[in-house]
Length: 122
Ligand SMILES: [Zn+2]
Image 1 (cartoon, helix red, strand yellow):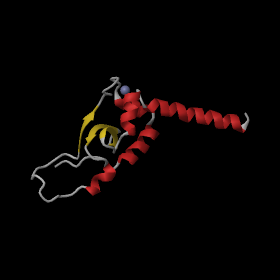
Image 2: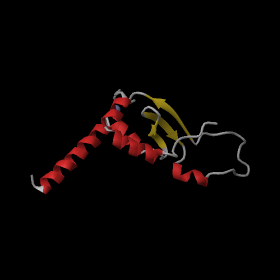
Image 3: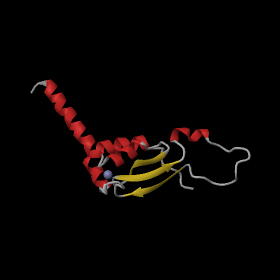
Image 4: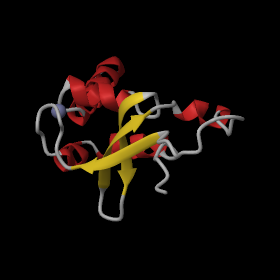
């Protein structure tokens, strides 16, 4: 087999694996929005595999350091971000653990990328 054919075959296999990572466009778009303002999906590594967190952010992760106490502001707590775990895709119903099993390398990379995006529980 010629080397260009081998490279093309390898690239096709990688593309197939990336296709396996996302069950539907809704899930893929929310994963891409992780850490940004709005709804995002975070991937977290656990002792047994992966956790999937649906997160709402009022402020993008990169802007959190710009927020602080302001003179005259009301004395109350607000959520910068909050999240909840989920086992199934909210858009198509696919079991998310099955996605992680089909493309573990990609989900490890996402979990690494999403470290630090999780909301603090107070
Ligand atoms: Zn889905």
